[in-house]
Image (cartoon, rainbow, N blue to C red; front, side):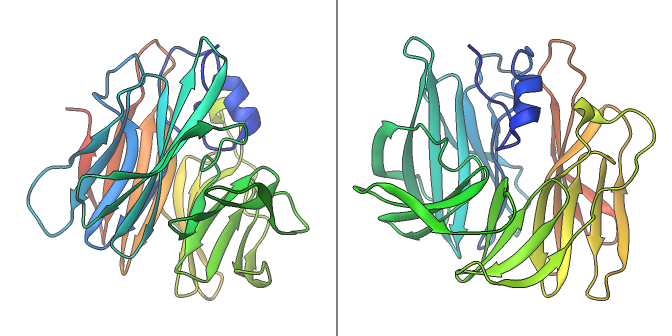
Length: 298
């Protein structure tokens, strides 16, 4: 059995389940001056040894791995509270047909240390996004709901929401973005809606990657919404006035994955997915007025 390859997009995961390409579950975040994202290392690795890549935006150095998993069929998921980085490492144990996870912590890009030991992972914790309330408590999304779990406790519902949610993104310490295929909501920590964007998908002409016309990821800053629109193969921004603008348009075989705001700058992550037996080629761009390439297959 091959592991799920994409974050909490269940139908999509089933479609790519049997493909030979290895592409990680994960995300793209800011932690202080560091930009971090998850992938496999090396990029051509067929064993799916996951890594967390890190780039210091104030340096001239190239991105480098912060941590590489010791296990194949592994993934990393990320959350940052200012400069404090929390990492969920997950591994699939084929002989037992089950997942395990642990949680690590890092500050200022130091070598991560374990704060939650390996344990069974029936709910794919972190795959749909998460927030650490403390070292001992996690809030996470598992489609279609949001849950909370203490280090030594049971998993319980966190708050009820009227719509099914596939992914959450923590905005500061007190807000969430809730993401579905076609809608995004900004809420407080109790689930009360502060702002919402609906009908985000459009009628798309031409071939849609894996036939999934959906919003894959989103980030919010000062009233603006940044989205990775999988179906349209585009990165787009919606301003405070509701005006929508494409800032980067791809064509087949490229698809957008993850986004992150950094004040007036934007980080955009995409992959070249050809399903030809090779791993997807990644591309991380820093978008100011024009895109600047940060990381890609060399």
